[in-house]
Length: 527
Image (cartoon, rainbow, N blue to C red; front, side, top):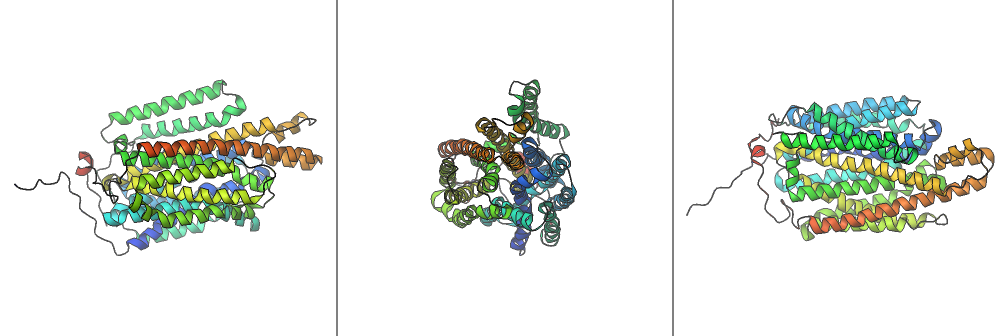
């Protein structure tokens, strides 16, 4: 009896002798984009003081980047698939350098928010392409390792950002946190042009402008409503209108995508359970981590009295945990499976955040060093494994779109994390702050942030206000960490119960057949 021919056959890409050097170039590009997501966290107290930015403006300085990043990621994935992944990646790096130059020279919160939005647009061109080039560079046997290296570079930027930002703020002016991007992006462009082969999928669908508008409008309205809710009140007509509009826009985007043959938002990718639950895990990790990173720099600077560089150094235990995780993930996945590794990572994240939620004003740095080490270990195990497990399920022809969807979900989680946890922090801080005896204007300023309260206390010679502000901030921080820790616990349980036990490629199970349309699409014109 003749053997049944396979339903789908893929041609392995030729092993490019420069593939590992090319991966270094791509990893450098990812690292630049990644650490810029957190480099401003340590600079926010300085920005708040020198640009007179309130809590809401500080949140938008962070969120303008992440919202635009998330909104443009899907069409960026299509652009790369259709017109060339290397071309899209280098264009994004050039735009990132230009936007950084504008941010470096700004003198107002509004201009800085606009520059950060442009950097988010640039980052959206870079991030999905960095993952999408993997199938064209590496044979299947090496794709998990290559993807894990890129995911590790992406994760490493999170703790490196505050350290680099702190060093620059200690020795230069605040605009140096943007100036550093200019030479780094130039190096990244040169490395990609020289080392990275071009690849594309000419059969990729055209740009969906209405879908892009729905995504950007829906995400922007959602984040704006969450940020303004605590100040205006959740029943305020503008807040309700923004939240309701976001639901309508995002629902319309999903419905539009379901009707299209080749949609920008390819929900069919979520039919693969490994991709789906890996993406869910990566999104939840991003949500939890952005909450933690929003509160930590101000704790170290305003409550513990560290300078900007000292704040970056105090975050280094997290880098240590991340490095250990990066060394372990590949071997652990082979031995116990991706689901178990991600679950353990989320459990460690939960333990770290819950330990941090017990912080009091009397605690020194020792407690923070302990739980930050656990945080880095849990972050590395969960995010590196989740991203690698999701991306190796993608057919080469859908690499850009699939990577774009994954990074979009992660950035949506991060944007919502900053907005929700920032609002939770602001509400808890104002509720615990004692402004008895202060004039109305001074009390309002002190309620804006702990930085503003310290300034009011210094100007009025009021150490009691400073002590109250520090206690109120620690209270708000512990509320945020407790909420984030509980979300991490629920996330670990969800992944443990729902994610498949084996990886579809390289983890012991057979690869699921690719959709017929994807199989028919050319894997790419590699040159």
